[in-house]
Length: 314
Image 1: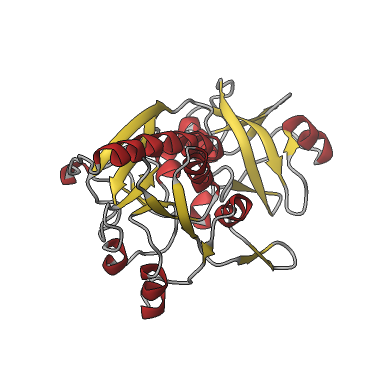
Image 2: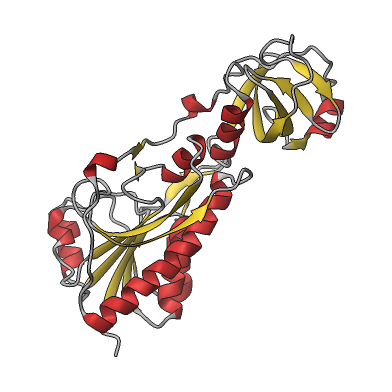
């Protein structure tokens, strides 16, 4: 018998597979919490979150408070009959008074192998730092950021081609499967065993900023390639070319054929744009100039008439 009555709190695409999995498995999701509709696009029209769209499609009631600290927000949730809360990239701080409402607990899907990469951007940071593996942790939600006891975790390898976009999709699916396992156990046993995090091993994944997206060509080709993968699809790694900001969407490490070239110099133009780095060479595969479309390197070379010796500036 299914005794769980769930409030699901999430906002972006990352949260959608978990909500879908809970619904498909027959769990009773009595309400969805998501952030208010946000203005976006050229007309700055209000757009609903990915989770709101999915909840509407599934016929689940949606609640969109701008914050949860007010008496009104508390009373709204206290009036709902639920005993479990599941959080997946919700984006708002949940006060202790609300965490105390579900009698069976509040659980979070976090996209890292805790205690490594607590915080807002665990996937970006894992790629950026060259981690060989990452994963998903299901943990209890506490007031301290991502510091709750761990219930279950699973890992996957990070390939040399994985972007944040690709890894986010993979971890979202993995998180959905893992949360179903956890809910199945909770539904059967009525309680869950958990393990405290090792505070000595904690690292923090600070939010990614546009300021970080600028490429320093004095870095090694390996470091730059990781930045390009980590910052795809946001904020997108960028360089200065002909006094404009050029976004670089895709690249891979190449073979250094010119030891005397300076950092940022274009040393070979063929199917790719070969750029000299502080150490090694980067093969740039896809770029975008302001107001233009994303172009494969061959199209970019022809369209912008690149010449050997041109420089991408740091």
